[in-house]
Image (cartoon, rainbow, N blue to C red):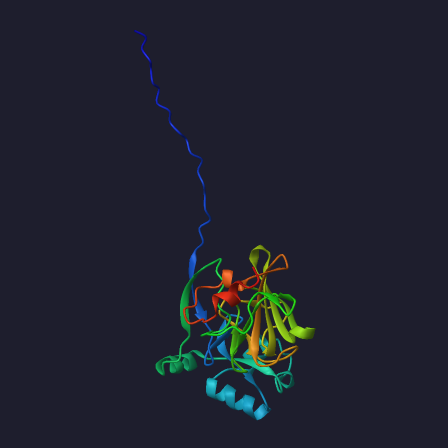
Length: 248
């Protein structure tokens, strides 16, 4: 009888490596505490030198520090504009004792966050609108609502841009960029590095707009993508399935 030898075969499967993204705590700027160039403070529209002097006294901040963080060579460059007034440690402690603090969320390095807090309505989604592509989301909120950077990056545009009105564009890693348009005020300038959750401006209705709202885009290699595919789930957001999918 012939013996049939059955050899065992060991299957060697190729190792597949998936990128591991570290998690970090992201602080969200609010109306009381904002961040700029690594300092905590507040963006304020300075009407006069007397107002500035009163703020410096109250917050125990030196004018040299204010000029430095705003890249302003002289006090007159601060008056009549939004300027960042940093808080002293004592001022931050006083705010903390009153319960004024920034909320925080845990995010992976690759994640985007919502550029506005408590978004519950979208007036326009990504896709076809009036016979042309609408390349982002329109979020109606009151004028003056704080706009936050959705991801760490470098500001590559800050100013007035036709139908977008007053806009901020931020360049991110891996050829992504985000656009924040129709603003009433831009806090950041071209070349500024911003952190996710940092205040970069205020909502307005500049450019081709029918009311206060934020137009928000995410692009990859300048190709517009649907931001809802990248933003965290938002249980308070109410948009019909038909409106979300009408472009597909």
